[in-house]
Image (cartoon, rainbow, N blue to C red; front, side, top):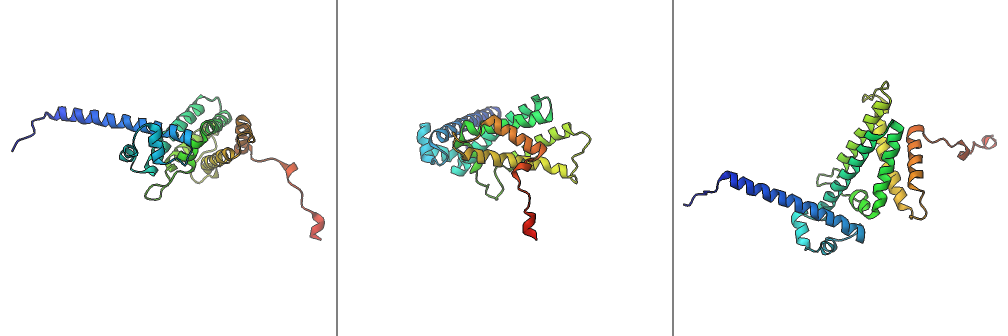
Length: 224
């Protein structure tokens, strides 16, 4: 019986090169998928994505398994970009309110740069096989970024688990996500401006909603 005489180091080198090739090819396919979604919309099929990329859909199936797998890969790439920009905004801002404003503005900027990609990767992201939300870890990390900023802004308050203030970062993430998705749903010509929206959301998160003129006092006569 002929024995394998290939040097293990040579075999490992080939394996490493193949792994690098696959990783590079996977990144290329994710980028091509993002471009196809941007051009054709979030409902694009695997066949349409492959045709737009100039390859066959079997290639996409080989690397991602199915459309849900491709969506998860695109979501991972999009959220990596968003998370990086949010951290840069938080780290380069002079104070907590400025950091929060920049982070909200970055979320709106990323979403509006390609609503189709945002819908494909985030708004319509499916759960994993075990039912866990695909984007759960991403939103958890973003809440930690907000918690760090809040701790720096309010060093004497303490964000221990028993404090209601510890819930603020998670609530803020949920509110910003809901606002971004509702904002995108408005036709571009009718929606409020990005800076105006970022200003409003920042005020809501930091100061609450103060609009007494919008609330009609109860009709005292109706109670008698």
